[in-house]
Length: 156
Length: 139
View 1 (spheres, rainbow over the protein chains, first blue to last red):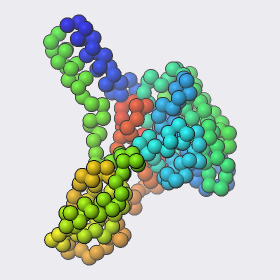
View 2: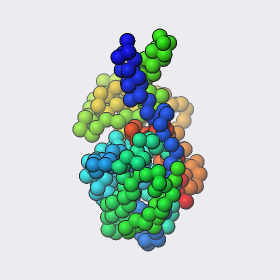
View 3: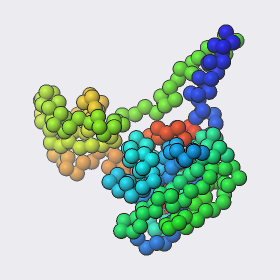
View 4: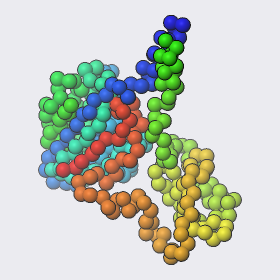
């Protein structure tokens, strides 16, 4: 009986993490005035071993350009299921992309890193434009990107 | 104790994404049937197709059925199952080329600042705590 209860408790815990253990997080990506077309941005997460864990948002509607987001593309093979329902428009130079979502608690302080790959037509691709460890202490701290992102912050 | 068990069993049995079922398709590209297969299906059903396009990951066809009624159907790209079949008001003239389905209307009515493809369905992604779609704003 006891083992049955344990099994049930375990399966329940595995089924339900989404319902209980999450917190609202706002990801703010401000682009610099790089003077070009709208940027394609892939926001995704890798785990402590650097393995791809999942995508949070894809800014940019045409899948034929996704291979320019080269790190993301290498991790996913451009799999459309990875971005099903979480795709929006590309982001213009100087604009700010603000994403609010409920992020699983388990991602924080556990070695997960949030990455942004960026690409702009006729300009250089910038895989791993931003890479920030997801920690509760790091929330609210602005990080500068390598080429197109003026600042990136996650707030909880 | 028995009650707790029952509740736990019920919760465990609930598939995580159940509440978010919709009529989109998510079929890997490798499993897609060619357009000719859709044409054959239409022929078998006695439909005359005017247009085959891809929408929300499904095939979407427009045309007329055997009785001449205007139809719009959503078809699973792998199994070719008809997911949705809509009959349109036939009094209207053929204005199908400007494809005014609900989605386009929503796109036209969109307010400034909201991302054009703001998701209406929950992402299928374990990172998302509650399975709700993100809210996105471009400033």
